[in-house]
Image: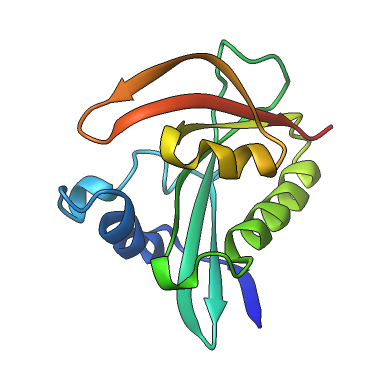
Length: 146
């Protein structure tokens, strides 16, 4: 069974680095807004082992309409645990939290390799594909939740 809980930002760094940014140092996997009062971080645990993380930051994107926007960053799931519902559970838990915060829309810069996953979760893409060096091609995606 997968258990979702709020975690401290530093708990996310290992998976961020290992899965999303192996070419970078652990220090480079820390985001400026990690410790912001408005930010929150979720972890998915299977048998008390962290298998997936996601971080949400209050941040508006001018290309998207909606009040009190939040941005998803650093979502990562251990490869051997993919397809077991950890990511979906993280997003569902996050959306409950976001609704409680009066959020109308959340968004992310999704790697093109996983944009289909986000589409299945109800996100829509906007604009052209763009490159984030050294990570690769991305799409701006969003989901209205109110």
